[in-house]
Length: 559
Image 1: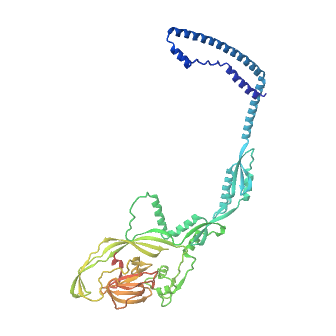
Image 2 (image 1 turned 90 degrees about the vertical axis):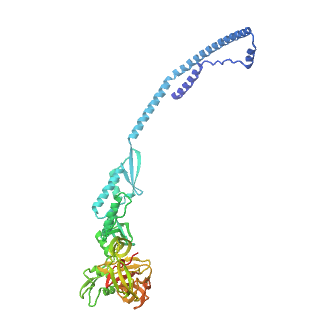
Image 3 (image 1 turned 180 degrees about the vertical axis):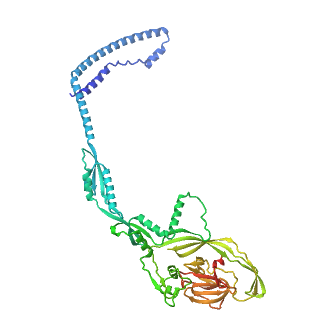
């Protein structure tokens, strides 16, 4: 019998011995239903006392017998217990030996466990793809190696970004007993497996690769420089300022007459920047890329003026607009050129065009009206002033769109009357003369929009306004057709004499429906809108001429 089994046997026997010492439970006597009935029938007190005396005697006898029985049981239990304990004493040596052996085994096991734990280390196996490179003691060894390698590459190639295939490095951790690692050997072998290559970005405009540059930041700076030539810097500063402010509801900044504000700057073409693996010699400098974007690699074109040349003739000969000639040769005044002068006719074709949208405010006069008193003694057309009138003033806001600084289109946003005009009073003869105007002009195009206003454009006066809308052209006032024909600048055009000092001109028509000498009434159709002559698109060029001088038609045309 082993020590552990003897221990179990002893404990079981001891439990049984303990139970022998417990006194037996004496059940209380309970009267049956019959006995209760018997007691109830006892009416005589003497009978009751006699019966109770007998019960007590019997109970005492029963108690004595039970006490003797319990004493005998206890004596027997003591004898058995002494017998069991003597056996346990004889096996004491075996029990104590088993317990000592268990203590020795436990103590040895604990010491071994501590020893193993003290000699177990974290190690990291280094792989490149699926190839085992070596084992390091800490992941930081590999991180420091990567940083040092990138720094070395950047010092050798300062003008280009170099990339290593470090994304192929994989670390697998393990906790091993007496695990071995060799940092230096792993790093040395890893260095032989890493490869470096140059990366850059392609600048793509409308699907065409323009050049390769160092990185996206370099491209963004170069594009910002291109935008800044046309107001992009101001827009960027304004947007940055608005971001820093608390968002509140406030009125938009108002502009004074003569002021303008760039609202938006973007590119006409689609611009993309794509990452690409490159060779270092493919890189272009920002200056070279910018020049290519602005000029499109176009070579300069020079022309020597010949006898009989004119600005319009040269523009037609080279199929370019007069605007290009004026911009490239700002010394030209009133189209005056001489034989032998050299003109720059270079038409730049930028690869990337900058589009700007500007809000412009101009102050314009509002032509006063004249209140007439009819006088049948005066010939129609004869006017005698009673009291002079006075022109009013209005601020007109335009939205002007330009591409590379050149005007493209103009949209009138609103008008604000600053000073109302004062009507003039005059006597007017009533002797009817057919074709005489009222002096009050109507819009010659129904639902018209102003695409270009009156004023100087590209160094030359734009004598009227350009209107788009319904293609039918209407007489702006009663009058007599003075001219119907073609000129290189106006194309097909009509001049109506209103026989009151005013004339109106309608240019770039595709066709006319009147003839010279014909009397037309205000609102009568006289032609169809077109794009003949020196025109950039289908529109009506409309002029108001007063006593031989051109005036701003918007003085006479009000919504």
